[in-house]
Image (tube, rainbow, N blue to C red; front, side):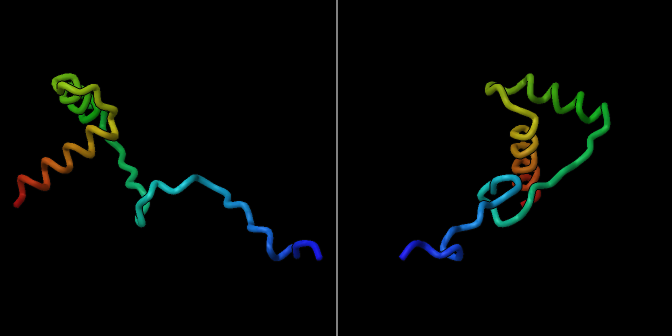
Length: 66
């Protein structure tokens, strides 16, 4: 006998998972904050994207608080 309709998995819709259990954090930055972020990125050895630069700055800030 053929497969039942119930055996067909449903397609998942929407944005793919980023791998984490929690969602992303969306923040708004003022123009002067964007400028400061871009200046910090320019001083780094690596060519960073803004999201990666923000992740690194958060890590630096969290380590400094210990």
